[in-house]
Amino acid sequence: MDSTSFDFEKPIADLIEQREKVKQVAEKSKVDVSATLKEINHKIEKTRKEIFENLNGWQKVQISRHPERPYTLQYIETICDDFIEMHGDRTVKDDKAIVGGFGTLNGQTVMFIGHQKGANTKLRQYRNFGMANPEGYRKALRLMKLAEKFNKPIVTLIDTPGAYPGLEAEERGQGEAIARNLLEMSVLKVPVMCFIIGEGASGGALGIGIGDRVYMLQYTWYSVISPESCSSILWRTWDYKERAAEALKLTAEDMFENKLVDGIIPEPIGGAHHNPAQMAETIKNKIIEDLAILGKMDPQKRVDERIAKFCAMGVVQE
Image (cartoon, rainbow, N blue to C red):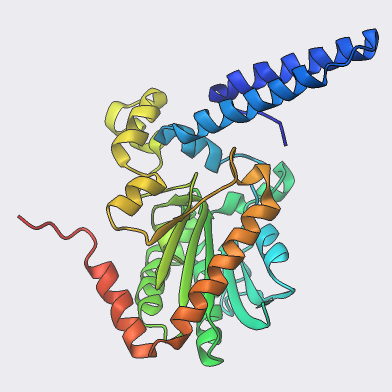
């Protein structure tokens, strides 16, 4: 896939344009340009590799929001042999921003839960742009409890710009719903794995983000606030979002260095949207590999280690 979308990809776009011109000349003049095309293709790959190995925080935020980036259901459909979606929190309604259900992975039944954004404007509105209401978190908790009851592992896929901050959400107890999930997820007796597949914004992400293993895809971010919001609070304008992104230390590398996540999942060069099938395969292999290890552990030991891991975060030793 050779499409380019961002300003920092301009050198690649220029080379692609050059390649198209060479092809047009070849068609008209019937000259063999295979050597030239090979050289340009090599340059494109080399330039893309150089650019994507040296991205700053804000550029990674941009990639995590790419409209063609694969979302939760796309991953589930690729990873699972079959998937049965489950709906509703049994109290208010079914929140479309969070999806979940049982899927078969490598012969094993796994509970998948994740934020779902839409692929186009109509679907984005239907999914509320991946911003969950309290009933979304309560649905997620209901499904986790169901998985625990049947002794099935849980995998969560996180991709949200934040929990929905509307009046109705607050009236129905948004803060309580997320806090309840933090408490309950900490003591689930089954293995829990969390993957940040896009945006990991604040409590909205953390509401389904407590697990034995928490991984970030290479070009994703995880933070208490988005760079734009941080910039508008500190500098009263969005103009300093790049500076805010660096200060927030929100990239996968920063989070791993600060021991806030357990690992980084490499993405195809250019981002997950360049090769969704390869990305899904990488995630699938990681799930299979880790579930084999976590499944052999004593449930109480798993819970103790999970709690200890999160309690150690943010501890400052003078």
